[in-house]
Length: 512
Image 1 (cartoon, rainbow, N blue to C red):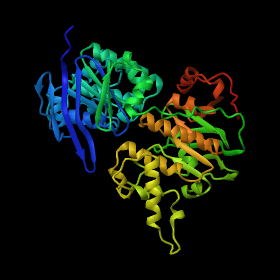
Image 2: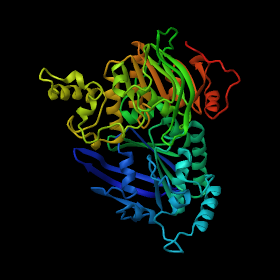
Image 3: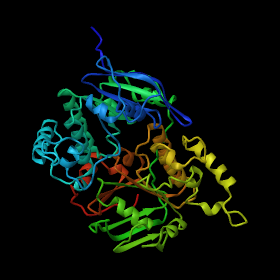
């Protein structure tokens, strides 16, 4: 049988950044009508390679061929004209515009200088039905759930004539049911003639949805395989170069005293709408309490109120027996609380060095006898954490803003986990991280719990919640609707509860 010719071929692609060889003579090909997964750790070069294909970066060496012809791609406009579209991990829509206005942005109109919105809306409706990407073309993007916003980005690429669709970590922002819908849609897209490149670090995704898998490690191609010929252990070894040791948590049968008590908590969001409406629960010493919920049901506001970043309109937050309701952040931190924030960019001082970012929670520990910061000690401390948490940076004095997203995440994790704390609020700690980093963070959380820390784990990843939690709280419309011990938790039941299927019993499990 004749081997299928590549639809896209990238030959000897090399890309250098200051102090980093991001891609080292990479050969990568995609066949027409396939879902090709690009797998690798953070910093392996996956997104950089696809940014070159999409024209966002120019390679230092190498060539690109499309259907056998050399392609000169200098910008995203060139890529779009060649039928290559890309949906980035961080969506780039204008929140105040409608779906139709976002999709039409930058395109020529038959009614220049005005938009022919009716024609655009009709075409969007036609495409959304054809590709099972249901969306209202007249809806404002800011009013849409994040999963629907992603559909808008996909429709925008298809509207512009994409034959090849590059998806960068598309499931990071999706719930499990939304992920299943996306996978079905990807298979439908391929049936309708599209070709898909799917960037991810999640093994079960590539094994479930892809036709072929190419693995990158440290800027080089390790190999290309098929799901039927691969197992998780083999793919992990290809990604990280060794087998991973994971700590399988032993469920806690005993816990200590109450560390956090949230009583009838109410709070508003930034637009003045009610987001917490009577949230009540307790967190105990030596346990991980996982909070599962679809984004936008009050999890962010709950954390912000506990941390003193948002005012409660009613209710109480009691930490270690002390009323901390509406106390400032510095008081919460001094009460023995550490914090892994949801927004890693917003919570990083990008102009300050990696070393300075790493001591933000405990900088007082580095004040010398002259009442000044001891920068030699800070740098030594930072070098230890850089090594322990595998933060890829030229050195500890590099500005944090120069790091990749995954390495900013590692910096934030190192900052939070390296101090002494009685309670840790951990928001989406492994989102966007590869399998090795995820295993490392999970092991750290379990270790801290076993040492007696109380951990509040906020995550939309049900697998993560199920694996780590001693108890699982389900949050819906600003309330904890039920709390289940891990042994009685069922993934499907929790998934439906996250979407509003409230159980008949109003009893919640107080503790393990």
